[in-house]
Length: 298
Image (cartoon, rainbow, N blue to C red):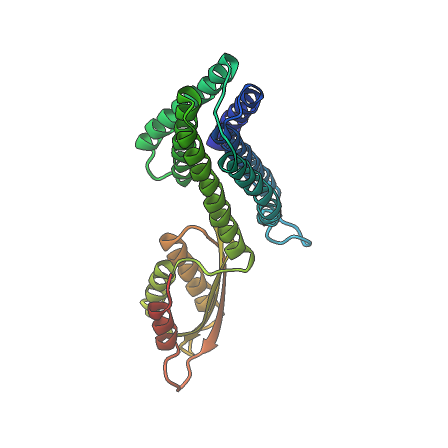
């Protein structure tokens, strides 16, 4: 089973247990932690939707498939849903701060929340062990970070639940609320960058340009535009100056070599467009492109 499916079910089960536990406690941190798991479940559900959309082939109507729908839906959901969750969390915390606040909890709340805590702990340990055996998996890295934040948040809520300490409870509620806000802003900004067509990291683009220029037949690069279609699918458009003596067959072979060179550096360049023009008697354009890459922040 894909790691995202596992994390989806883990977060959903944890959210259900924590939501049920709120019936027998007034703990603000437990309530906010439940909202955190609920938000994670929705986010993972959107990722699963994106994985399903990614299996659809491209068409004339959608030449790059429908995977970008994930980012549109995700940005809308984060803007609305995360805002509601954060506002609810802050309201609950402020309600606790503003009055005479005593944390009460029945045995059922402690049992249910402890079960959810154990699930979070087992998930964290399992992901850590999986990452040690596959350290280059970005999905595992992201899931591990999410599991660490969930475990930390649940630890604060568990302390408040068992000690009955208002200080622990309010502190936990505030910390978890900030985790929700920071997570929403981080993911939202990442989705925004993809939707506006941000270029891949500058280090990758610089390496690609240097390797293309190292090909003997390439005299200059006039156009060097790259953008992210999704986080794991890039497009690159090149206008390359070559010797006037090259015929059609030579340029086709050169185009294949350029594409192979680019993909050897970064396999996520799934779409590469190379246009050839005759060498010009003008200052080399690639120097200004290289300067921009070196001076612009990644």
